Amino acid sequence: MQITPQMVKELRQLTNAGVMDCKKALEQCNGDFEAAAAILKEKGLAIAAKKADRETKEGLIGYYVHTGSKMAALVEVNCETDFVAKTDIFKDLVHDLAMQIVAARPRFVRIEDIPADVLEAEKEAYRAEIADTGKPERVIAQIMEGKLAKFYEENCLMEQLFIKDGATKIQDLLTAAIAKLGENIVVRRFVRYELGEQQ
Image 1: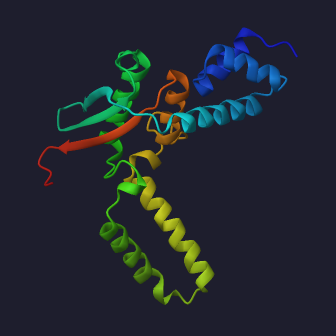
Image 2: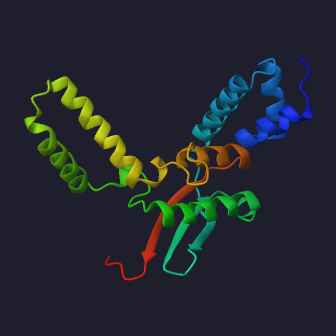
Image 3: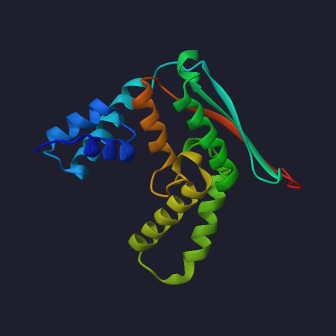
């Protein structure tokens, strides 16, 4: 099948992968968009996994102030070199993350950051909620798992769906940036402010 520049462009918009990577994936899959996108995603995950242990001492502190100046966020995102920190791709990523934090109100960066007492309190609340339902243990375990997954998605930045497209997790957005920029990228910390809100 003939791979046209338009096909490459569409796959690139869908996956954020490089032009040559998109062309090769389309050639490998004989023009099948879904299969090519899956290959590119897998390749991005492999690249990100290889870079996960690399030290990240450079980066940016980004911010977003919502219209009306009643909500704002600061976020520290680290990478390996100041060269990458100065790229538009990295700057856009940091800005998007700050906007995500304002809009989606996460409390933690990742699941591992949730304090044990907070997690246990959530589990206790779920147990109390479903204790008298009379459902079998297996079903209760599935319900608990579903409720915890929802809690993670609402409260952990990396588990949230990206507000700009609603289909991509923030972790996947970060993985795509790592694959594209060729460096490890880590969201270190963030703070969110809302006028009149008690910390």
